[in-house]
Length: 391
Ligand SMILES: [Mg+2]
Image (cartoon, rainbow, N blue to C red):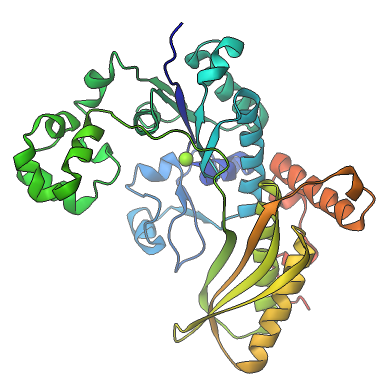
């Protein structure tokens, strides 16, 4: 019986793009990117798109240049959030010690789950199988004695893989990897390291401190510890989120109020759906508006009682926007955002079950579930359907 720590890093493969390809079979096998619009950046790229050198965070224009046949899809955050909720509830079947990094990525400490579910490889296999059965999507999982190495491992057999690194094979696996797999080594540091002939993790681990100090300064020891796969951080569950928000940068500046309202509704829906996915309620709603001249303002108001309903978030955001437009009439908008803060866990006790709020929340959760299963187009609020003749 050992008391080794067993950490899993679970990372969905090309998450947003895979959800799109799942929901629209005509996109399968094609280079697909998900991202706001032409002015925005790539939020996710399918594996077919990656072959063209397209990466997330790349400007959409550059991606289009690299691959003229690229299919660009607008983000459907509420759908991704609903799938995310399914994935995290699978994690919860195996361990309560979950540290969420994003909608599709988490660290799981399964050290105490092994007696119940079998060894860490068994657990990873079961998690991957459940994810595939319930969502039709694939994940990659890295298994290691700590978070640093687990995160590196999940990339080593991607997509749809499990990669296991133990204390016994750690040095052997890490040493030949390019040094930039170490988190915190960006392009500038990388260039400086290459100049002193440090190309691999092993090079970093074995180079004398004196050679590295001009590059890492007081972080030299830390950098070399990372190269040796040393990481003492534990998995911290329930990382508290301060706010959830969504925003859109318009292709061309928007003057028409119906378009603003329609976008505002979409954003309110994305934001509130993510609140529901994360089982949170918000006490404050804010909007962010950027004018054509790039000046940006925010306005906020309370949401009472705190909740996560699309309608409440939209109504609050709409009031804020209308007030702002009264002060700045005839304004063209470049960007619009909706956010929720003052977040608290959504505790739906039986006391609320007869409450009208709870019933509405149940309805919206059902909508989220249907969307997660059948895709976004299965249900759409009349007003957010893409059409110019609304309102
Ligand atoms: Mg991912």
